[in-house]
Image (tube, rainbow, N blue to C red; front, top):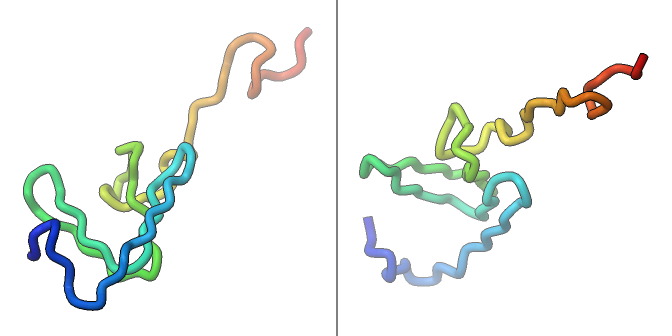
Length: 83
């Protein structure tokens, strides 16, 4: 593995797009250093990296950030008509 400041010749900057409430979208192949010191690699054209830590495929996003509990307060979303 190369040092963080070393880049292969001809390698341009990677584009990273944060998705509000979602993952980081990173263009090109990526290698992610995990907390335990291991690495995870993706060769996809665009890789979604989880930022919510709910993913079962961490560090890759599996859209778990979309699953939210519904507001069950009286009159809130998910609540039927008031009687």
